[in-house]
Length: 593
Image 1: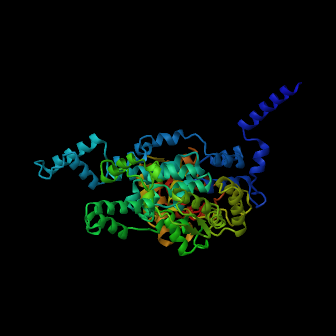
Image 2: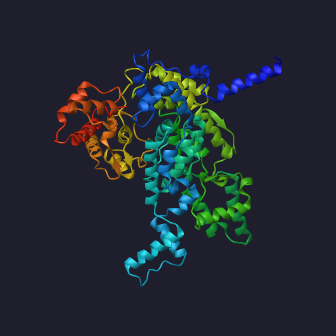
Image 3: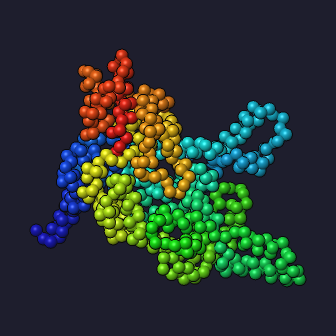
């Protein structure tokens, strides 16, 4: 056999091993879970894996993972490439999800913008002869013709899609990480300026980057209109640049050329007043260092915060709302070839070179030369993303989310070392974490308390319930203390047990379990017979054991079963089945993952 034939045969074999199931040699060295070493059976390990990297275990999931192999299942989740036909069908009616940011801004208008539009169209008639009912019908017809709706409809679609993705997505790790990173880079619907950008923020900024390099995610959030509006960086400006200085000097020269006193001219006076009234805003700079990268103990000082604010001065948002002064002025500015002046337009991000501080700057002993423009912001983000303090801070947050409320320092150090070596590769960091004995330690298994969102979604997934009105789940999450998308502080929701569990919250969680199991939540339906594989239980004891094993795989304890047995009442077995499901969902075991 000649050398060419051997080479061809080698290529064919390589193709088969590479593009079929993952190559066993590469696969085994990459992922090797030490659960047996930590005293877990393979089934217990599968349950733990599903509890941490999905929004809840569905009937049949444990056997599916066992058949695939634990490492292979996790590798597939890291690839984030599972088909999503069921999810797509559930999201098909949500048209906002297909809109770009500009279309969203111009399709969902608040009342004051609707009034402005009506006036500009010449149909806003304060002295109309219509009565209120006729006038409302007239306005509704006008808005329908223009395909304009209120922001409440946009918010409903945003909230519903998060719930449906958590329930139906096959790429569960991606959804769990989307929730994690959104919380890390929190923005809030409670702030009107950023509210209409949040769907794009989650869809286009967070989700595509959850398993990539942290630096890419950091840059994407820094340039996002949602973040720029939420932390007021779009208002952070400086006139310490040649463009602004020339603007004022040219104005003065024009006035002087007409033999007028420059500092009595209204245009000059207004420019000077503007420079005095506007300036740097340090909100984003502070949260970038404290919450997004280094952490509160990351070694920065107030001087660093001010210098960072200077670096990000001029980082702003393209005016997206059509037919207003901001948009009109932006469109006019294009004719002046603003790119040559150092302006940057990237989608809905706008770097305003005429509002950027061009002085030299120093952050954490790193020197930035004068006139760095837009690029110095990117360089700072690169430095911060690869800083050892950032590596430790981010890895600790990941370990708290996936391992325990108080993860071992040894684990955090291992993850942080990988973070730095891999330039912030999230897949590599998660691989080190899940390969560690600490992830499989008995002090980690079923020790994390579910958030209200995790609790409600896991109940739906555990029972294969059908959901036609997802917003009802949002209402329950709000009742349970987690009004997601509305958390006002940039910290995001705390990730620790004592924030979520107290006497009042436990009662509310029990109430949710009973309302859910009794099908008293509109648009959410559970069939308790499905949990028992459509078999009629032989006795009440058998029903409790069967349902408990289904909802709490590998965690169904005699103590829990006896507690439920004492609380079950009613004459009909079907009523008792419903009670059993509700009591188990409200049980201490189900509250943990």
